[in-house]
Image 1 (cartoon, rainbow, N blue to C red):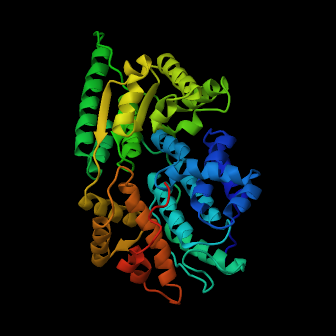
Image 2 (image 1 turned 135 degrees about the vertical axis):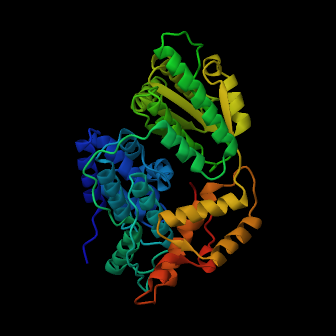
Image 3 (image 1 turned 90 degrees about the horizontal axis):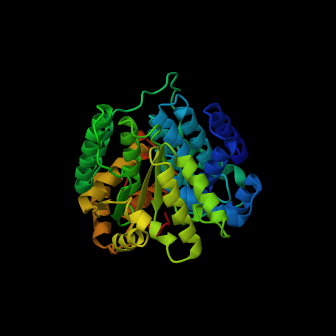
Length: 451
């Protein structure tokens, strides 16, 4: 069996591909380190192993995991930018990210949840670059418990982690030619293919129609009213806001309104520094990375209430003016706090004139999301498993903190781990056994995994 690649080695490969694509080494290293931490955060001892490999502290590990969780279900910022540009290196970079995910499974002691995280995250990166995960044979050593390893013996655990990961992360053949950037119609078709979100789709189509005509009028030398391109997305967690923001970036680039169309997703921690004066610099650096694309600020209302957040907002308003032809900002969060956030600053109120509401998903839509996620990772939910998922939804409280699509993803991550445990004593599983998730695989207690 091929030895497991260490995290340091996997990051080295990632950095090499990134530099070939013109991406700074530190950007790729930071991104890969955060993704690895998000994969391994539930593994006992992972923080210490990560800190040794990266050269940081255990607190750095938890901070990185918080940043990297968003990439367990979606392409990283750099990969998203490479795909948006049609770069021929998007697939090699996705494969390098998949190798980072594999290496993350060697941090600390093995847990079934880490395996689930890895399978779903690898599939997300590879699928974004146009590859489809391939089938491989998972094995499970007898000394591995469903929640954590109880034996320090390293080699059987490595075999499990590697084999189970390879099931979702086997690389596809490289693409020799650059990928042609998608057209507006292709991107709108992707939007329309999303599950649910009918009101969102109508509003995005309306925005595109307005901006397309504005662009044509400008090309014809006609005058145009000042139309802001910045948007407010409101809704509960897991309702597709980031996915739609990524498509908006691509659509605006296809319209010629943005040069790149990449999505840079941040929260308060990535904009605010520990001292006054430093926050302005930090915010400006983030905006510079988003130039030519979309800056997506989640839970933007967290920037209100103190002088550090105010400094970040003031800097953001200035940057939006200075970069008005090369930047789109989308702020997102719960409806009422977002309304107060925009109203609190005249500079924001004048720039954010369009609010798009994201409704919660229905049970049927959540079942479709689960099925789609499973398919992308090369798993199949039996009809009985889908029925059981609906039973779980029926007894789950739907407060404002309900995860929506994240609930489906968390369910799949846990089910993949349970599936591997269920097959631990089967020496030669059939293809159906390797692929199919049964009702009992969905009976996990850790649905509330933070994301």
